[in-house]
Length: 205
Length: 205
DNA sequence: CCACTAAAGCACAACTCTTTGCTTTAAGAT
DNA sequence: ATCTTAAAGCAAAGAGTTGTGCTTTAGTGG
Image 1 (cartoon, protein in one colour):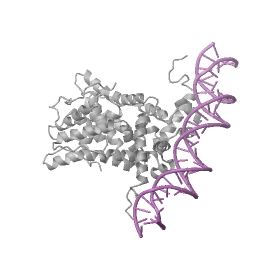
Image 2 (spheres, helix red, strand yellow):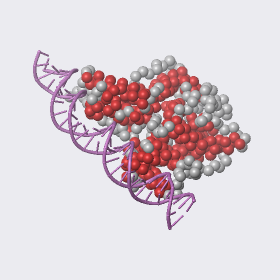
Image 3 (cartoon, chains in turn blue, cyan, red, brown):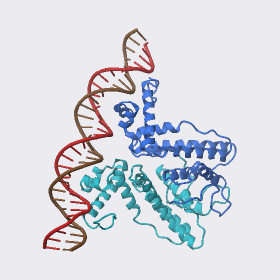
């Protein structure tokens, strides 16, 4: 009995089907938006029987969450050894991940209230993001520096990025992501409350 | 033809039906979660015919967005005249609004990709939040102070609140909301990178 | 008080998603 | 090569949502 791993038969039709379905979902999300992707549609696109998808994933939310999970585990930027540069890299990478077509949609899917265990989905999603930022932080700590806490990075860098992408605020680009990190690492002079980089562009409107 | 306002007959059955449906939606969202609320369910609960709801709102997303919109326009904290205190009040109010049952769900509904015009929904939602914070800022500006920009408030206060509520991070309470404002208004000494208030509790896990 | 008409109620049809029992395929083990 | 069995395919039934023509109700203006 080969452990109750993800698949008892990883190297065959199952894997092919999963691949096909995943690809179909990614395509469909980019085309019509995550909220209009249904299991029958994904199955049709993948050339797979709907019942197979129902049996394997159960709900569209679970499927989307699964795709999102795998999607983020792909590549991750490697570290240079300088805290600020590393954080900047990760920030930019995170922003790009969010900004690509369907990026927010996948985020939303993973946070959806009806996924098997919502708490699990949330935690998984958060931990993936956290992990990327935690690496540079721990590296810095081991070098003897005293980096900010992960929570602080989440508040000051990650949260604004998510917020701005969700609301499609203009000027949310690589430069802005780096500015957030810079603002966190080197607080501005004193009571001149503007970050160094891109912000202060056009407000809400 | 009385302008194409929201209602040509505000004071009658229409209004009653809308009230009933709105109440039903609020209840259902709190009970079963926004993703499981359907138009027939809301109509049943409201004692209204489903077709009436379909004709008036069209989709469940539009209905949820409508409810969310009205829900936020209700009360708003009045201002004291001190920038920091006012911002703290608004921040706490915003947090409480988000944290009440279904708060995030409504947020998600309003940001949903298939509402009539998604951009409109996003903009409306953002503008409502912005407006609440902009009032204190403008008041301060008129008093001759130089308050931070709205964008900065969004990045430093609003975004973290939303992010933390969405991910159910612990310790996201009134005290934390005030700490965010404090951290924005009076930057910490220099390179002691921890805000004064509640943060630095337990990380992700 | 009456006429007008916007909006709600009603009934029914069509559609899509979802589920389930059974059959068939093919990966992995003997 | 053969056997075993997890997983996919198939088909058909069920449930719930969505859409539409028509009738009825009840504000609003004369």
